[in-house]
Image 1 (cartoon, helix red, strand yellow):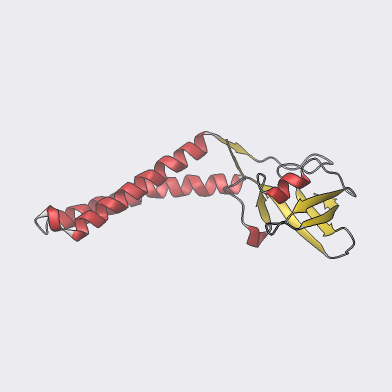
Image 2: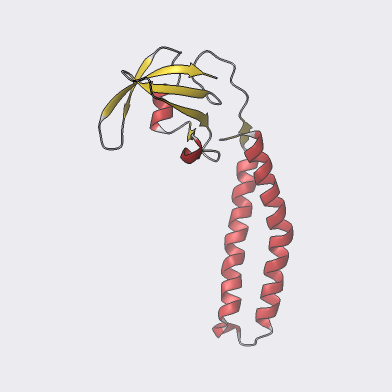
Length: 152
């Protein structure tokens, strides 16, 4: 199951519509043009268009499957860290904080502070309340202790 924000769900719906309409039309036009060049066995334009068509059709199927099994992330309603929470954390003995939103895989973007619920940092925070500490094992193997500053 995929967890999606309303915004990501709508973005994927729009991408699907664009691919099915404009994308398929564009590929069909490219294929027709390439066929007009003659011998298909050595026609690079034709083979490239067919490859692009395959990739596009695979993306269409991927989006359809994502949307079919998607669960929209609801707003945060708990005192504990959960899917949809925006969590402010600080290293155990520091005042400097970092803020992360717990999202599904498709919405995750670390540069925007959005982390996948299945990411190790998110997993180590789940179920924690404000003031609680947790440990997180960094990719280099170092263990770091954090505390939950706030949950929104």
